[in-house]
Length: 181
Image 1 (cartoon, rainbow, N blue to C red):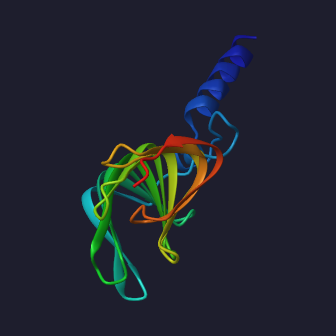
Image 2 (cartoon, rainbow, N blue to C red):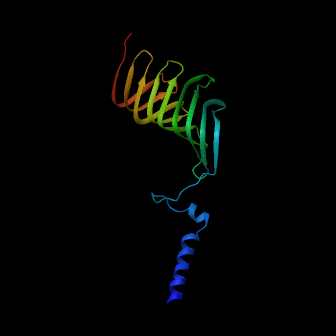
Image 3 (cartoon, rainbow, N blue to C red):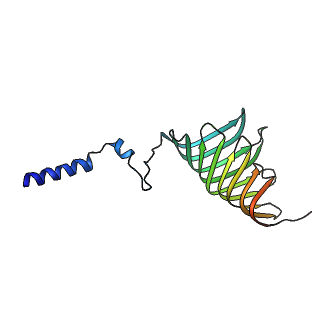
C-alpha cells in the first residue's frame, strides 16, 4: 500500500511539474484560447509607415510586442504624426494602446485616443480609432467628441473623417453647437 501511495505521489509531482515551457506556452488562457507569445519586443521605437512611397504616419512608442502569427505589432503609450501625400504634417495624436498591422496601412488606436489637427486646431477624442492609410481616413463606431478652437463642438456615435479633421461625418446620436459666420 505504501509503495502504491508513494508511486501515486511521485506520478502527481512529475505530471504537475514535468510539463515543458512549450507546453505552458500552448496552455489555454482564461478565455480558453492558447496564449500567443510575442515573436520579439521593442522599446522606445519610432515606426514610419509609407503608402505608395510617401510617408503617411510616424508612430513613437515606449513598448511594443510583435506577433508573427497575427502579423501585428501591439504598442503602448504611443504618439502619432499623420502626413498628407505631400509629406506635410496634418495632425498629431496619442493613445495608451495601438495595433499596427503588417502588410497594410492600418493602425487601430485604443484607450484615451486624442487627435489634434495641425490645419484647423480641431481636437478628436474617442476610445477607439482606426487609421486607414490607403484612404487617409479615420474611422470609428465608438462615441466621439470633436471640438474646434472657436468653441464648436460635435459629438455622436460612429465617425468618418480625413486625417486633418476637415471633413467629418458623425453617424448616429449627433449633438453639438456650431458658430455660424
